[in-house]
Image (tube, rainbow, N blue to C red; front, side, top):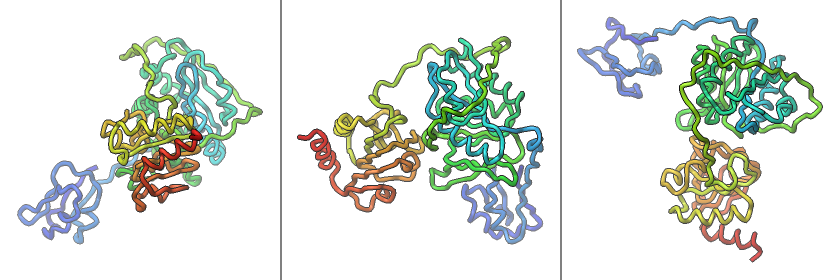
Length: 394
């Protein structure tokens, strides 16, 4: 794709200069000139009354889609032989999408001595492709990538879903690049255009201010990663029947460029926020790091995890592993208590699906109250102290 100005039609009216969001257009000798760095957003073309700005459209690649690609795949991630919760969330959503397309749902799992594989079927999978080898026990991305690409090329699924975890964010883009297909990262919504048999992939953009729906029209498979806790998992159906297909792994010909020396667990969290039923989060209103001790005391009494807004993390008051929001973790607990958090849209994107939200803030106009189930306007230090006393029965 490219952009050019038809100098015969250009009058130098400067209407394009005014609308360029990147200030890349200038008038030279009464003609518009576009500098390097243009993103082809089209704002100047729309503003030009003389049709002097031309944007060359890319010719879409064609590929066999409807006839040669069928089925939805979910990458079932494991660590230490234990399947992750996001696998079940994606299978629940994948089952819904597969039923809409009248196609099969498959789970793909790499590892060694993986337990409870039958759970993948109970949560909706018709088939499970299980590749087990000591070489796959740890997350060796080079090995995972080669094997995943091989299976996709052999079986030709039309949609591939994975969790937007640290592994998913590293592995799935590599797979998509090798297959020369599209990938939408960090989706918060998935749907199907049944007429075109296209996956509608929705994700926040421009700092969470815009929700964009993206499609991959010409290439297959359509690939997307989804943040954990975006979708809720169904109750497993123990009566469901499916196939567990064991796939042989051949390491020959693969050279891994990395080697895992050690895996260090984050010991700062007594309860991990991704798995917590109750989360107590603090924001800028806590004023300093020492005041997070008050939230830790409340969390201890309630058996909760401690979360934080980005503002608190950026100030260095609490480690990044506790951050909730668009650039942190997405959570969906039964109870979310927001203390001194104003409620920026980026934070809301990570917790607004919580079952019950309690907001404590001294500003009655704070945006957090718009999504809160219960709002308490007051000094958070007084309110939290009263809650601790009440829960302790003092």
